[in-house]
Length: 587
Image (cartoon, rainbow, N blue to C red; front, side):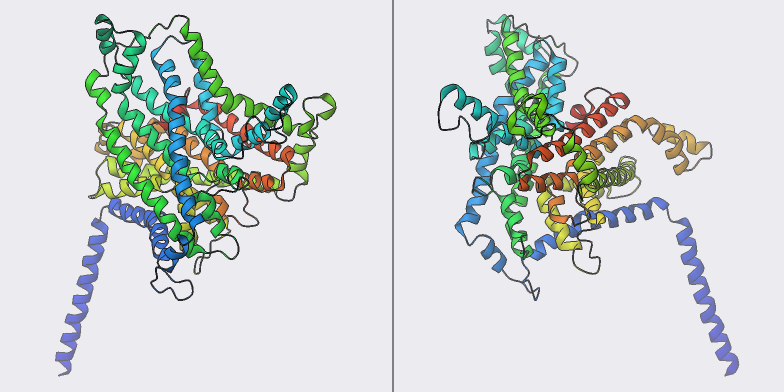
C-alpha cells in the first residue's frame, strides 16, 4: 500500500511538473506582440470603453441605490428649458455651418484655384485663426462688441448719437458669429485639400464651350468637391454643438442655454451626475450619426475619381477681381484674428481697458500680478504645459505602438485597436469628461481633482489626432527595411529603434506638437475635472471672465497666445510650413 501510494504520488508530482514545463514552454514561445496587443487593449478599455460604458450605465442608474431607472431621463427632459437647450444647440450648429460655408468656401477657392495675391499671408492668418482658442476670441469680441462698453458700439454711438448698440455680442446671432469665425478653418482645410487635386481639364472644357469663369466655378469646380464641402460642414456642425467656452461666455449672460452650458449647470452643487449623463446622450448620438455620415461622404471622393491627381492645375486669372477676393479674405480674417488680437493686446497692457490707447494708460502690472502675485495663476500656467506635455508623450507612445501593430498586421483583429483609437473623435469633450467623472471620480481610484484624471482625459480626447498621423507615417515606411535588420540578426525592437524611429523623427515631432497645442487650451474636459490645485490656463481664463477683470484676463490670454505662437514657430522650423493645417486635414 505504501509503495502504491508513493508511486501514485510520484506520478502526480510528475504530471504537475510536466504541466508546469509545458506552460513555461508556451510562455517562452509566445510572441511578445500578442502580450503587447493585450496590454494595449487593456489601456484602451481603460481610456475609452470604461468611461463611455459608465456614462451610459450612470444615465440609467438611481443615485443612491444604483438600481435601473428612467427617472434621470425624465428629469433631464422634463422641463421645457432643458428641451429648449437641446433645440438651441441644433439650431446653433446649423447656423454656424451655413455661415462657415459663406466664410470658408470663397477663401479656399481663392487660395487654391485663382491668382489671388498674398496667398501666403492668407494661409498664415487662417493658421492664426486655427490656433486661437474660441473662448479667447469670444473674450476679444466681448471687448469689441459688448452692448455697453464695447469699442465698436462706443464708436457707433459717438458717430451717430444712437442709443441702441450697433451689434450686441450677447445674443444668439453674436454666439453664432463667434463660433463660425473660429470654426471655418476646418471647412477651409477640407475644401482646399479637395481643390488642390482637381485638374483644370474640366474647367478648360467648360471655357471652350463658352462658359465664363464664375459659371464654370459654380457649375463645374465646386460640384467636383461637393463631398469635401459636405464633410467639412458636418465637422463644423459637430464643433459648434460640442463647444463649451464660447457659449458659457455669451449664452449664459444672454439668458439662453445650449446643451453644453446646461450640462455644466447640472454639475453645480449638488452635482446631478446621473441627470447630466442622461442629458448628454442625445449629443453623443447626434455626433456619432453625423460622423458616420461624414465618413461615408468623404469616402466617395468623387473629385479624385473624375479628374485624377496627375492633371495640370492652372490658377484662374481673376483680373481686377483678384483684389476684391483678397479684400474679402482679409476682412474675414481680420474679424477672426487682427481685431481680437489688437483689443486683447490693448487690454492686457492697460490700467483700464476702457480708457483706450494712451501712454499714461500703459502698464505691465497685469502680467506681473498674474506671474508673481496671483495665488493660482502661475500654477495654472505650469499645470497647462505640464499636463499638455504628459498628454502628448502618452498619446504619441500609445498611438505609435498601435499604428505599428496594425500596419504590420502583427496580430489578428488589429482593426479593433484602430476603432478604439479613433472612437474618441466622435465623443464631445464635455461628454467625455462626464464619462471620466462617472468612471474614475468614485472609489477605489478617486481620481477627481487630480492631475492624473486630467492627463488621462486629455490623452483620450486627442488620441485620434496622434493615431491618424502615426498611422499615416507608418504607411510611408516599407517593411523591407525592417526585414533587412531582422535578416542580419536584429530583433523587432532593434529594427524599431534603429530604423522606424529615425525615419519618423520629423513626423513624430509634428504629431507631438499637434497634440500638445490643443491640450494646452482644452477647456470642455478640464472644467468638469479640475481641482483646487489642478487649474489650467483655460479654466483660469474662464474664472477670470466671471470676475469681470478684463485687463488681467487679456494678459493671461496673451500669455497663452504667445506660448502657442512660439510652439507653432518651432513646428514651422522642425516640421515644415503650415504643418498644422496640412496635417489637420487627416484628423
